[in-house]
Length: 193
Image 1 (tube, one colour):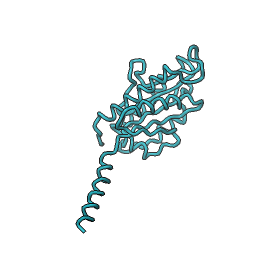
Image 2 (cartoon, helix red, strand yellow):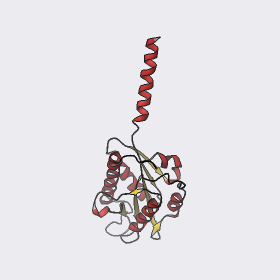
Image 3 (cartoon, helix red, strand yellow):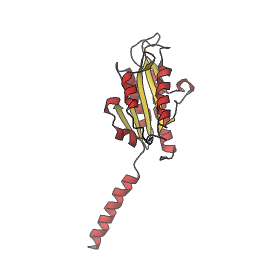
């Protein structure tokens, strides 16, 4: 009998310890029409996964539930440029975030975008996403280097970047953004409202 009680206590200890040691989660949510934004999102996920101690959830915006948002310690959102703005589907996604009581407050937020031209609006898109994150109380963070100050972006349709896909120079910035966010998630204490 005593042996059985000890085994049960040991098993419960293992289960409870696994809950207590849940790794912080980085949510990468994107909308992609041509595949370029998804490719940049994949490089961000790769960068985040390169950091030990985090869990990465990689979803298109139509797959994200409120529970994904609640569970994440960091939320990284990406959109293609749509007339120098976020794609309507991305703005609708952000507008659907729970607001009452600001349940996303103190999470880390970051943005990324892709566009066909060098001056077509990638920075505007990232700033629009970051503005919305600030309203929700997220702590917004830019990329690893000065050239990615607002997040990661890619140009896919203007010379010399007219291959129609996100090229390595941009994917490297995405990787850096993902790695930076993952490192911050580990070092930032979890702050509750």
